[in-house]
Image (cartoon, rainbow, N blue to C red; front, side):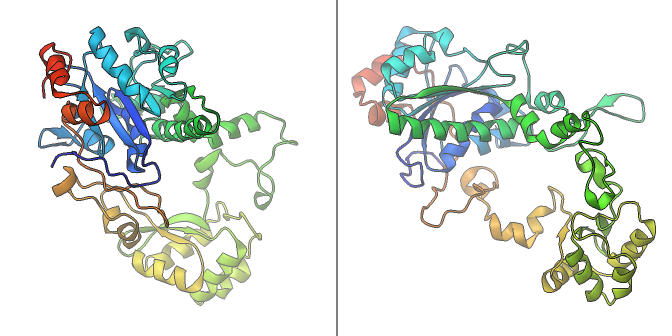
Length: 417
């Protein structure tokens, strides 16, 4: 399947983005493309962005990472080491709303395409640079990959195998996903400003910053606990005793805890007294409520092992699906405990995420996770091959004629398709 047309649908239809990206940070424009923006990915010859070869799985020669974050984009190859290639890039910027530099900070500036140059061509341009550690600080030029931002932010701890070797534990990546998401939001703020004032702006995003910010609750909790205990306490339901920070404090919970069902696990979250009463009555166990009524809110019944043993036995009597149905019927909070492998079978997931099929997109992929009532999101086309849309971009976007396209091609400015 070829990505041969700009959809013209979605809330961002009419917004043009020029992307210069290597590897994962290119996800910043993925969000914009999913919302209907026209994203032109400018790649350097030979070979373009080697994200196509990174990580696993590799699907018919392309990485899943590439297929997902570059879906819905068009690609052109430009040799920006040649002045003629720089001029083509400038022509692209003249008609664009956004330029994204998803590499080490200053990469485009070193090619004569920095923000100060581009805003002279287009005062409304929003210039976004996204990198590992941002444009300031001692790590600015430090080479890095996605997991580094999570270890830097304190999100992932080192673990050891049976032979005493340190290893990276399984975890959900934060910085490499959150950085592009925050960056896309900031870009849209810049586009709104440019529309209202006629002036663009420069913004820079560090994926490490995003990882730290996503974990603000824990880091700010530690800061709070450094203050005197008569100023910063625990919760009223815990007699103001300080529990461990964040989810570490959940280990001792009982009314808010994971339990084994007859075919898996569920998480039970009756920290409000009303929910706890509903549960007990629905199970014919009003005696449990009378014995342990708890506080009105935020009561996890920490370390109540007797209650925990009762709940352990109760939850083993039904399947996870049966518990979900009962929680719906009697109004108390229970949720499935899925894995990345099993979530596809969850009926809520199936309702919310009609997958893009691999037959059309190269891989089975989740759609954009926000629903729009009065706007239709475009169905993204398959992620492009390097330079796949060279001629149509030069002809349709820039208005170059065939002679000029041929001239640029013969001069080696456009790489090889």
